[in-house]
Length: 441
Image (cartoon, rainbow, N blue to C red; front, side):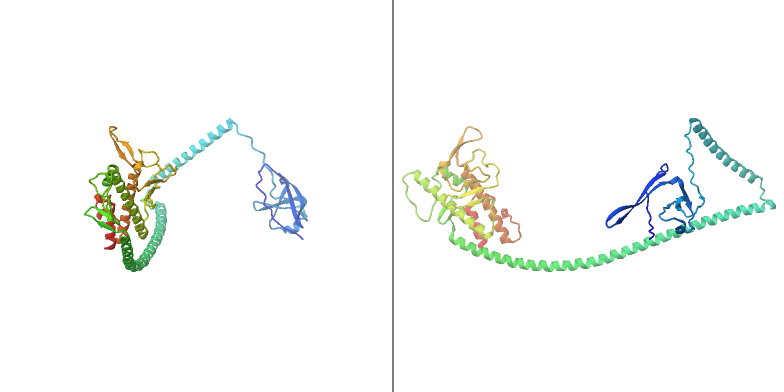
């Protein structure tokens, strides 16, 4: 058994010449120290590469390869050889003194001056020889020919060099043109394929759009028919009848034509404003009984209006901005949007301490209060929560009108201003009657 292997040692600085090499072997998963070498690199000798190395070495010897040359130790060889390249380390050179550095600088300057003088002298010699030569003399014809041949040779060299550069440039130009042609072909192919794909896609989309338009038209017709049928049923249950051009009644109960008239009845019981009904006209012993009768009719009509708006919202899938809750003739509307209580001149009325606020959709005279005007000299009777509830109810009515117009027309515009006059927005029954006619026409 004669194992041979190589070990790469790390870089060793020149001033370190002693080192220790340990070789380990593994037997049965245990590592054991095979041998240990304590080396003195200054005692190494070189071995020729053409010698029979295996016959030259003893058993368990060590050789090192440095700079493509093999080195070993004399006591590891079977015979003595002469070291052709004795490793004699030179003595270190002492540091330069200031005088030696000054001398070196002077020598360097002298060498530079000598080189300049040599160049100038050569130029002068050439100029002098050129002036001495007589090119008309036949004896100097060889010199002239040599000079011309040198110039011709130089010109040929320059021409060959330029020719080579031109060939290289032509090759580059050809390669660039080839790449440009390839790119043009790729772009043309891409444009052709892309154009075909886009045209096919557009045709497919046109077909799908036409099918969707036909389907949309069919669905729109079905939707209008559905809304018309359901609205006729609702209209039969909750009929809205005309009393005159601006006054309407619901289920036989006349309702004020605007908020101003409604508040005038509730607050001041104006006798000039009448509220008729289709059922009976009782006689009252006092103005108070008559006033209570009219406010109860207003509350009943408001409750029916809320129920009607909830039913229309169900069949049209309308989401109101403000939730309305049915509770007999004491329905109310909820504001879940305002972070603070929306009535600035009044403290929190419902006392629930939550982020949602309830406002009545019925008139209760016990909640009336005197509010001082901004001038500070006058006061007026107000039921601020009731008035704010009517305001939110009117906003929901506008949302309902917008949604129904969008559904019936089918274009998604939903612009109610073009159909409902602005001055009629607070005439609740007028707007509801308009919706009935619009959906059942």
